[in-house]
Length: 511
Image (spheres, rainbow, N blue to C red):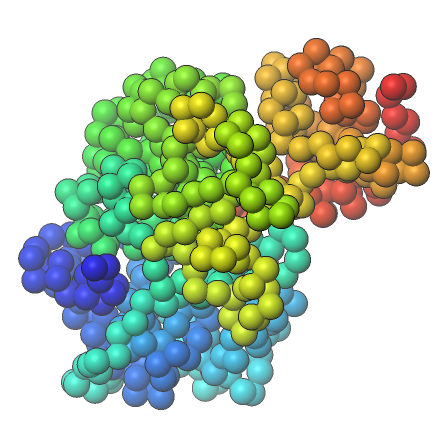
């Protein structure tokens, strides 16, 4: 049976008290020290009157105090509610208000935002690196721990964290998660208790939270970076003998483009886990040729459904130029349904629906929205896929990513996959633009590779050689960058608005 975070910490502190748990900047702590600090924090937070079930937003870049707060808050049955620090003040205020927050934990660099979000109904608790920013009646993390009662609250520990969705289709929504499938992830993806794991993803986001807590749950050692830096990642792998790491596709790309990539010693690595978007064929090939075929895993997941597929081993090499996301994840029951709730035949596209011990509990205070993700005892967020004859899942796109061109549904990802093979294309994102004739006109937004050139007509012809005529883009626009969230996912609503504003008079290609 899965343990709570506090149970896992106590077990690991008992089994290996002197093992390094977290290394952060130039300091570190053992499992025994991490447990002592966590229990002090539990006593301090309980003394403030923070109750079981109470939501406590956290606004911070990666910091060891943030990890302690996750263990301590869940240890007293409260609910950490981390927020994406790149959100607008309006979205942050919405998230804090929606959580009915009386207390908010803050890291350094957020003094101005704290002033903008000030409310007499709540108090700030400043982490150690941010205490010089504190003012007025703000609470200081270190002082709270130093004056905490000696008695540690018992019998309250839970496992719920309120993780927020990416907000690509509206305001981020609070998803309550009490099940993370740590054991299943370890078995499926190759993480282990003897690992030294590098954590660079923002811990405020779902993937960053899970893949930082996972090694600590297993009793491994974590090196935590405040933020991603490709050079720092290569240095850590080489000098700290990192065994496992979770990196988003954009991070992987930055790493292989870094000047130190060719000569850095990376032989300690046995797991590179990636997800959160498609990994291009060229990037897969570069990683496999340099590191070998057994290291790279590419998984598919969502905050609500959890992980549902994983591509690994020889399958990565065999599927370089497709968006194959692998076999159904260990412990996950997966089926593809049509709009009437019937399973589709193998090879046909359907909505990906899953049942597992990693799925979320529901959206906070939104039963209607929660119900919209349920298909009986299965869950979905509208991802679409097809299973091939080998049982491998191919990600096709999202229901909201279908372009209705001339009344026919076209999956944006299929066009993107075809155009991504052109040597001049670094990124491509397909959108549907309002059009009287086509209902939605297929537009490909292309970010060119440095030093490479291609015309719109050339790319349309290139797509036409690989796709049915009705699927090829009728407009191509070139942009230096496209709007993305903190995980690198494209904000297509914003992208459509930008294209309509910047390229209002571009004419379509003649059909």
